Length: 152
Image (cartoon, rainbow, N blue to C red; front, side, top):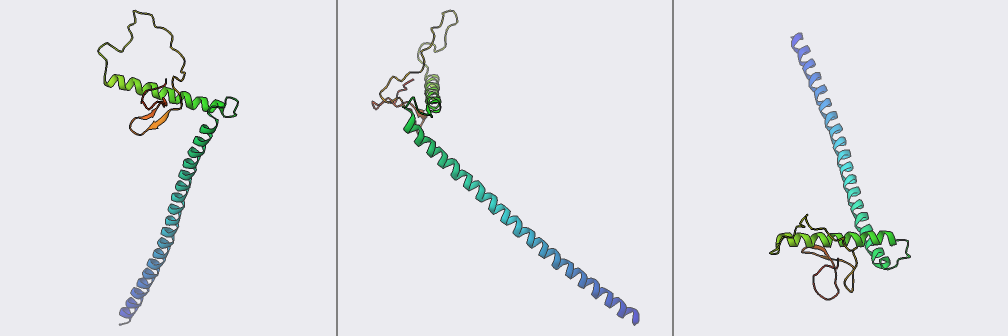
């Protein structure tokens, strides 16, 4: 019987040890899960805060552009000019895309046999040269006369 009692005691000690190890593993996993959840929440908060910064920076830039776009002596004149030129390029490309969608009866491609005249620089041909955003087609020029034509 001594062997049986000894075996029973060893089995009980092994099960107690296993139970203690299981509880320790559970507590460790719980702690790590809480830390991981906190890290994820903090990272999501950082991403959200960066999105706010980007949105507000764009709004601020838009306000500065509207304020200083017509002032050639402004410290922002170079950036305003770059924005204006980018709007003009967008309008030109959208016009070309529209022409490619609905080609005229003549070919829109240049014939290499005829010399090409140099292009005019992008100059506003309308009252308000500031391009405006059209939700249907992106940035378009604002001719100021209610039409949807490009100024460039």
